[in-house]
Image (cartoon, rainbow, N blue to C red; front, side):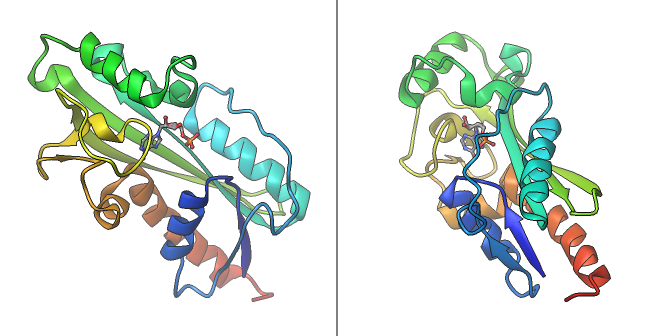
Length: 201
Ligand code: IMP
């Protein structure tokens, strides 16, 4: 069975290919299907953003398409920036954004520093069926940025049980416990069911 993973992020594509290894599912990229459209992420939920991408790509190339949308929710920001994470403080670099978040949270401790990464995955079939699943990963905002791996808010996303930020953890570990990994694991089950129902396989 062939499916398209609707992302321009090479890291996510690699992670996703790794996940479906052994399932006899061939993962195509947007380049492979010549999709070069821009799909805005302006909805109010991760799921709607993911679904829109998966639907448009599936309708374009008449294949099953998988898409994800994610963000960070910081309790002290009333769970913001959330679905707007990619557009949060656009004038700042991530290094500057992370510094600002730490400054904003100065004087807080314990649960007041709680944060969550969230991810929604949508799967859309050429017959117009859609499926979705979610994943989360809980942490706290660290008191200083640490680590050079990962991207975005990873240097300030601290996992108490590992004593490290996401940017300090080996990528292999992040890819086992992250919000995306947790959502991908559920997507794997949906894709396996679709493959088993696919008479053209
Ligand atoms: P998207 O799902 O690629 O649209 O990502 C949305 C935004 O959420 C990213 O631009 C980052 O700001 C943030 N984000 C999502 N996942 C992660 C992660 O694993 N590490 C760091 N930032 C993330």
